[in-house]
Every structure is written in structure tokens, then in C-alpha cells.
Image 1 (cartoon, rainbow, N blue to C red):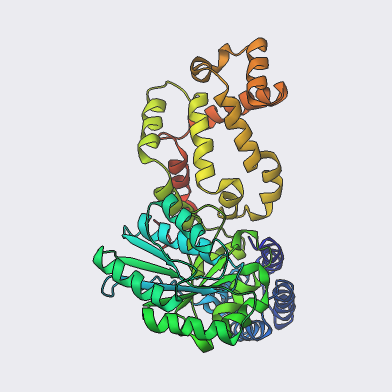
Image 2: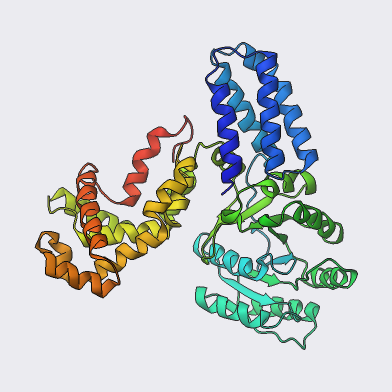
Length: 452
């Protein structure tokens, strides 16, 4: 995520951070480099101008010049200005209204709108413990209603059926009545998308909004579209009272221009980030955490929160007790840790959130990427329970059988066994063991006041 921007920004700040003394000249050079990095990231020009003006004003003031560590003070200024541009603090959904709380989701076709509706429903069910119903007011796109029905079934939330022959505004009203009768906490309405903005579309969604009277009206933006997405959001805001933005496909965006621009240009807060294809790949937007990731300082808080919600605490404790008793770390334990890594979005997602590791993502991914993890799990699955518990019994003939059963090469089986041996030594160093506890040990690396 935002790899190019992170590379450029960390390079600039590394050179400034080591300066024992800052002058107007080297601040000016650093600011020019930051401006270039933002231009390459496709950040909107008004945003760049405001950002650079803010950085220069503070950097040339007493705050930096009188600092004992001026280079670090400059880095803090850049971090603070990034946060200010993106909205200062996270703005969660307004869910305190009378049930059912209605959320209307709008956007262009192809932005990931229907998938975002399902992800939001999953988020509210799992994180907020809300009962959720979803309904589709999209009567134009083929199979749109069926797609939402399938997604609703997969996450076990209620679905209000509709038809392509129905009127969108009437669908909204009927869905609200159904949600009220079933005592549903939150109703999410998926509106029709288009390939471009037109008056007919705008009039229809106004009528849906009028019928639904939503507490939240969220606009879905594909972060990879670029600055056109920001202009489209502004046009929608003129037609609808938008309350926030869901930014999708952020995990595949190497530039980051939309994330840095949308709040400043539209005045609407980013509320969620779509971070992958999985139905639970939706993150509450925290400006300070994203700024930290852009500057190569990681985001351990988000990683720990993910671990707390997605990993099995009971299994972690079982591994802890096992290691305490000196029974060792076997291949079944390794398989569990690999599965835990997949639940956290894979090695790329984890690396992007570890301080100082963003620049190493590509190199590590080539050796330990998601495909590599899946292959390792397949190899372990091809072993007998006895082989998993006692890897030392795996001889040449057993290796051939395991390789054939998993579609792997014998060299890959050997590599897995070697990696397991190395990892078992590492796991002994963690008194409680497990992915969650590994993450907790990193707490000491967080800046003061950022504990969890």
C-alpha cells in the first residue's frame, strides 16, 4: 500500500532526520523533495499547496530551530501535517439513532460498492455486535440483487429481497419497514451505480435518500482511479448530503493520492478503508495510523487490533502451555501459525504495519509470500499426524510421499523442515508463544502514549 510514496518520503526524511542542524536552505530542499513525492503520488494540487505551506511555516519557526533534535522535529511536523490533511482523527459511524439505523451507500459502477456493503455489514456484526439487514436498490445491473443475497448469506446477515421490476425508492421504504418489524439494529441500502454521472442517476438517488432518510450516506471511491474519483465525490456531494467515504482497493494502490486528497477536497471524512478481497478486509480509518505507515513507521496498533479480533486466543494459550511444559513446537503448531498469518492478511499486510519493514516487503514476499505459505500448509497437510508431531521420523521415502501428495518438490519439503527447525528455536524464546504474543512483545517499540 502506497509503496512508491512511502519509499520517497522515507528517503527524504532519512536525510533530514540525521541533520544535526537545520537551515532555511536544507529545509527548502527537503520541502521540494516532499512536494515532488506528493506530485508523483497523484495528490491533488490544492492539497499539496496547503500541505507544503503548513510544513514550511512550522519548520522555519522556533519549534524546529530551537529543538535539540531538529531533524526529528521536522519529521514530526510532516507527520502532523499529513494527519491534518487527512482529517485529524477517525470518525466512526453514527449508530446512536433510533433503530433501524439506515446507511445508504452510493458510488460509481466498478468501485466495489456492493462488496463494500457486505464488508460493512460484516464489520458491524463482528466488531459492533449489531444485527444487520442489507437490501439492494440497484435494479439495473444484472445480478446485482443476487450478488448481495449471496454475500449476505455468506456472512449470515438478513437480506431483504427486491426485484429489478421494483421502484428503488419503494424498495428502500419497504426494507425499512421489514427491518423495523424484525428489530434489526442497522439497515444498509445498496444504491444503483453508473459508469458516469448523469442527471437521471442523481435524481433517482435523491428520491431513494428522501425515502430512506439515512443517518449515514457513504460514498464508495476506488482509490486506484486517481483524482477523477475526488471530482466525482464532489459532484455526488452536491446532489446528496454525504457523511463520509469508503476508500476501496487501498491495498493495491501504490500511489496514495486519493487517500491524501479526498478529505481536503470534499470536506468529507474517510470512514473506512477496503484492504483486500476478503469479506472482513475493511478497516476503520485512522489518519494518524495511515500517516505513520506512509512515513515508514508502521502501524502496530492496527496489527494488534486485528490479532485480537481474528486470532483464536484459546489456541494461543494452548501453545503457550505446551511450550512451557517443554513439549516443543511441532509441525501442527507451525501450520496454525501460518494460518494465523493468513488471517492477518498475509505477510505483505503484516510487513506494511511493522516499523521500518515497508521497504523490505517485496524481498520478503518473494521468499515468504502468500503462495509460499499456502504451499507450506499443503505440505504439512500431506503428512501423517505422527509425522507432524515428530518431524525427525521423516526420512527420504516419507519425503517423496509427502511431496507427491502436496504437489511439491522434495527440495520444498526439505526447506519446510529446515524452517520449522529454525522457528522452533525462536518460539522457545517466547514464554507464552503464538502470533498474538509475538505482537505484544513489540509494544515496547511504540512511541510513548501509544500503548494498547
